[in-house]
Image 1 (cartoon, rainbow, N blue to C red):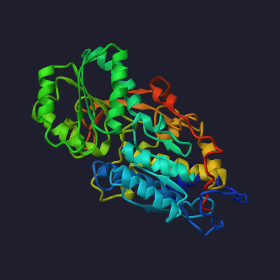
Image 2 (cartoon, rainbow, N blue to C red):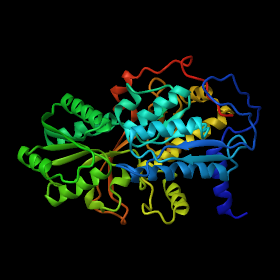
Image 3 (cartoon, one colour):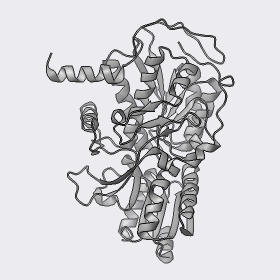
Image 4 (cartoon, helix red, strand yellow):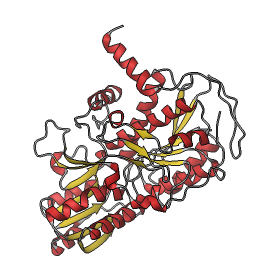
Length: 431
């Protein structure tokens, strides 16, 4: 065996499958679920709820590459509990109604063990309501409305991305001190944009900002001239934008065309990699947040990028970003916990996830992360970045400015979470 083969195999078995050893698996009793006899040849099925159309199609497919990469690595290392992991995918279309239908079908007809995915917070909330009805564990990998782990939390739902309030807390104080107190707010007019804007406004006001205007932006806006003219006339120190997906790409281009990318200062709450990839480093104007970057100087990062490129040699986005990263680490942690618990029983897995600490080195971040037991939100490192003035190659868009530890940017929205009791959460195990 070559050294390179040994290194890859040992990585997969130690990093992915720690805790899979031994023991019989017991099942039951159940309610509101279909039950099948446990068998080593019965796959563990994951329902992937990733967008392939609509506002967040690019992000949905980037997320899917991350989840499928984790599944493939587990299967290459022998699966989980001696069983292969299968994935069934359906397009949630960036649409809450479609999310509801997909979740119902996944659980009642496809007999999935778990649900993973969703970009748009409205779709994620719809999926989680169905998941809670049946008791199916749902990993919301990339939705970042503060409400997802706040008033819309559920016992079965775990939220893996940083939320709008986390990013606002990381950015607002420094922005006021550096650029000024006169703020102009714009936001996509749906649940993520609305709630992120409210969180941004609250944080900015607490630090002494003056909000001179705030403008809701309909999803699908392609002509930004009227909004940008309002910004010119208001002459703010800072524009804080909670805009995502295809709207974000269009906005950036038109901001550059009107030469507004230098002044005022732009605070773009979160910069998802699929929304900027292909536009060039000069499109990354302003200051923005992210949870991960492919040039972080941390152990494991370059190896993760290399494995991604080997698995997806022809994809347009040829380096992974934060969305793919979130999908990967979420799926990896779910399968690890299944192996540790020795079962696909939902209550056992939920209890193992609550309060779970994930080491910084393992997650390729600067600080340890923890799954908050009271809100099921992953508290993690938040990075502030700006466009890179000296990129090392044509993928090096970001210059990382700082990293915030989870406690310093914890969201207040989690206090609104009221998780269902274990007794009120149906037992769910597809065998």
